[in-house]
Length: 178
Ligand SMILES: O=C1C[C@@](O)(C(=O)O)C[C@@H](O)[C@@H]1O
Image (cartoon, rainbow, N blue to C red; front, side, top):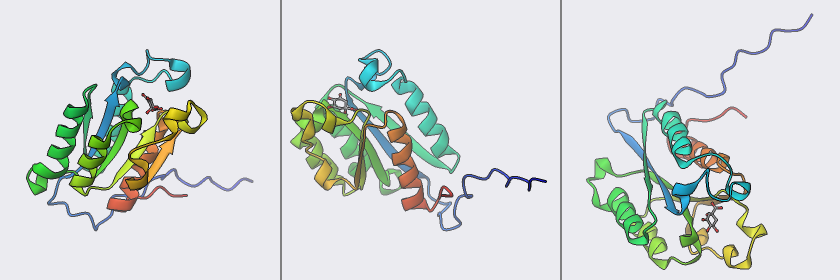
């Protein structure tokens, strides 16, 4: 006789330590050309669109009462404005707790994004769909990695889910059972 399989409970309920009087927020930032996901070099970047990635992450965060604010732009200055606003300039209660960012090609060029992220003093995770270390040498330098909490690359769109999982656990004690 086989013993009954454990009831599926992959996720512990939101931790009591979460201050329910605050609306927790996270920021997802996607840089240049990532609006083309699904159409752009799918052998490298996959078939999942950015809208799908954002929808799934928003829904998962919302399960725990966390708002995920999503921004994408092809313009470096616009991304700097968004990071400044959500990370520092908005009222304290409206600011995000942490950031997930795929700066795309700006990864390899942008001191401005690095400075904006540092200015907010919000922790961030850098995500890349592709394994940048297995590609052209110019993709192997990032202006952000040394000041990121962590870097996830090469795992496709699941990299974003993993970054969210980390923040759920690290900031709000919402832990996946291992
Ligand atoms: O646009 C991108 C996407 C990317 O950030 C990635 O997600 O794999 C990698 C970058 O080198 C590239 O410029």
